[in-house]
Length: 182
Image (cartoon, rainbow, N blue to C red):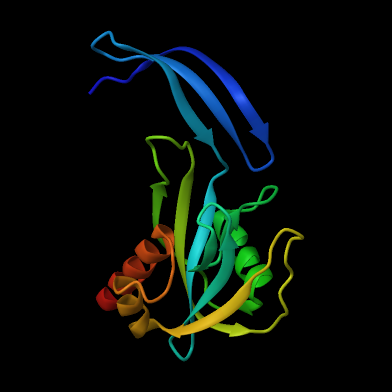
């Protein structure tokens, strides 16, 4: 399949949280789209964090666009010249206070939404986590920590008994699949 040809591109909005770009694109069949908007964001890392007792460490946060509180896996963007592993270990420690002596296991790398966004996410599994620190949150973060039995979480997601988002659901099922094959 042929790529679209970009005829023109301009920024509509720029901020530390992300940019919005307006592109004029010509499709392979000659049709021109005059206002194709692309959201530019940094790449992320996130992780399924499991304790020695097989509890999954979730963070509860208010999400403005969803107008509610959601249970999610720890996540964030890398800082400075961090590797993906260093970034997710730091994010987990800052958001939850949990650490592990084991190295994070990469479960996969995915585009977030290639129809409208340009960023990727790398999803990890961190096992044998223990709480050793207090949270060290950014000034814009308010996070509650929740431990849920790993085996129970799948049914809570499927029945919508907890509010979560796509990344947490897909990461959970990837981790469950990985662990069942180990």
